View 1 (cartoon, chains in turn red, yellow):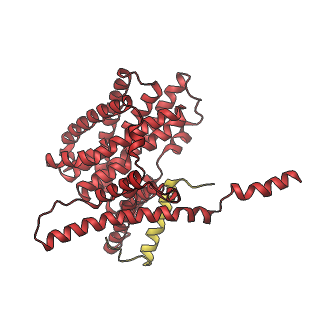
View 2 (cartoon, rainbow over the protein chains, first blue to last red):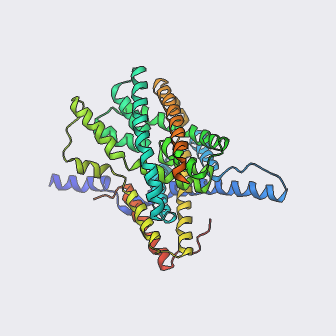
Length: 363
Length: 30
């Protein structure tokens, strides 16, 4: 009787119906849409004003406007609690956009550019891990924080850090330090990378590859690419996706290292581990590329899917600004940030040299 | 079993492809 009564009393509190869960997302998703569209509207309005008044105004992409508007809302007004669940979906929109972007790549492009990207990714992984480990030791950071920073800088930012946190049994504090450092540097890269790319007169392909290799978080890499040009955004996503595909191997390597040192629980089946850590949206991206390659889509259908991908990215760019809290980032302490800044600058410089060296295979 | 965010993204993209192929979604402007 008691247990039945407990079930009856507890059940409504613990179980949220799928419909209710979906309804909880609506306000935040609407906020993402409003802020993203405000960015697009601002870009178009400024361009139209310039045209009608015969003025040459700088073309500031909707990407930057959406991020700035998001930053203003999250840091000045604060994201309303009712919107938080929906704003958290920004990563879902990013991944949906990447899957749909597959329509703009035939498999030959993926094999060629993905092959060059993967070769560069391998070099970048080794460089990033070596640099971050050396700097972390020089600044006497805790060993697991060094591991997290190395994983974040070498593979794919926040997702990799979260994946690794469980595998190497790192503290919450170390994980939030590493995530804060990666996010702070991602914000800087949105401004710095396009400026450097334009100063060097980089091609869309070379710039996209560089961003995909050097910017750690997928959302920021996609945005930094799109800020340069639509084509550069496409190449940045491909290079970043190639980098993301290595997440399982890097996290597994670190997990085995910490198991040997007695700092983490043993791993069971390594194939299952790799599959669990593998970013599944890469499968969707490749699937749509296959369909595009075999001519499954008419020109109009390809345009529709490519535009749906752009709309999905618009939602995720708004989310970048909305989930960035500058106060929290500044409260995280200076040593991990210095390691992050010095390490990321070194990685950006070395990957730039790598991309310029690989440029002959990109043409 | 709960689907991960990655699989949701693949599922929604597949749905979008199906709707575009069926002509339910057409003329998407940017």
